[in-house]
Image (tube, rainbow, N blue to C red; front, side, top):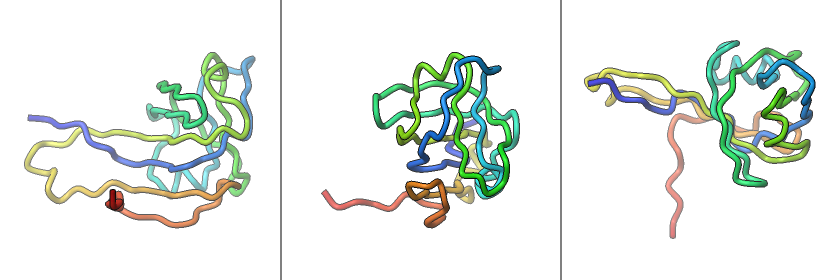
Length: 126
């Protein structure tokens, strides 16, 4: 059996640009792509914390160190500059490989700079 698991995420990214008249995609600072292992043209899911929108697009590289997170094309209707979003990618694993798999989690500050990284979502007390 194949299972679909979270491969990587950028947590609390801030949208810096929303470009309607641009070929669809999401431009992401190259340093952030490298930190997560998300590849250019890889399918990504975006979850907008500001308005609840959830949508799928693909990643393209933006200038390294720029902090750019640009939601482009039709998806520009779903996210505006300053919105906080989660960008996630998923991968398929054989069931026997799941126990040893760890996702790459990258947590960002308000300027899309890396605050910390991890491989497990912290458990929060109720």
